[in-house]
Image 1 (cartoon, rainbow, N blue to C red):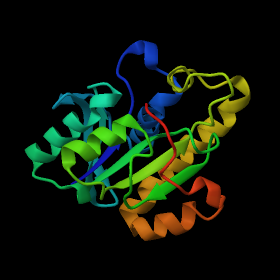
Image 2: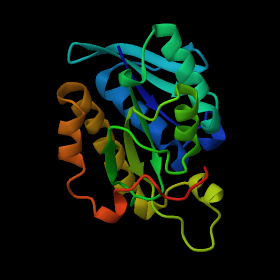
Image 3: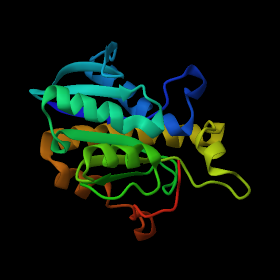
Image 4: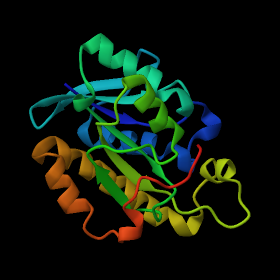
Length: 201
C-alpha cells in the first residue's frame, strides 16, 4: 500500500489558506479517484482505494502542521510500512504560485511539517511533491503569509498547481519517481530547485 499524505491544518479557519495546499491536492485526488477521505485513523482523515491496480491511502493528518510526523509515524507503524511507501504533498513558499517540484528526498527547506516528518521517521528519504504558493511579499511575516488566502488574481494558477500536483502523484504511482521528476521539473528555473530556503513554518 502507498500512502499519499497532504499536509495542512485541520480547523475550519485554515481551510483555503496557502498552508493547506497539501489538503487541497488530496481533495482533488479523492474526487477524481472517487475515494472518499472520511475515516479517522491514527489522528488522520483517511480514505483507501485502488489506483492503477495499486492500493493507496489518502491521508490528511489532523495533528496540526508542526506535528504532522506524529500521525505519519503512527500510520507507518500500524500498517508496517516504511518511508519508501509514502508520497508527501505540501506547500512551498520558494516556488511561484502553481509551480510544482517533485523530489526523491531531501531536507525540509524550513517547512515545519516536513521537518517533523523527517524527525519522527528518522530519514529524509521519502518522495514528495511541493506546490508553489508564491514568495512572501516585502513587509509580511512568513507565518501570516502562509496562513493567508490566495488572491483572486492567483486563483487560476493555484488551481492549476493543485491539478498538476495530483497528476504528478499519479505519475509517481504509475511510472515511478524518475519519470515524474523528468516530466514535471523540466520548466523550473535553477533558482527554484533548492530545498534549502530559509523558512520556519
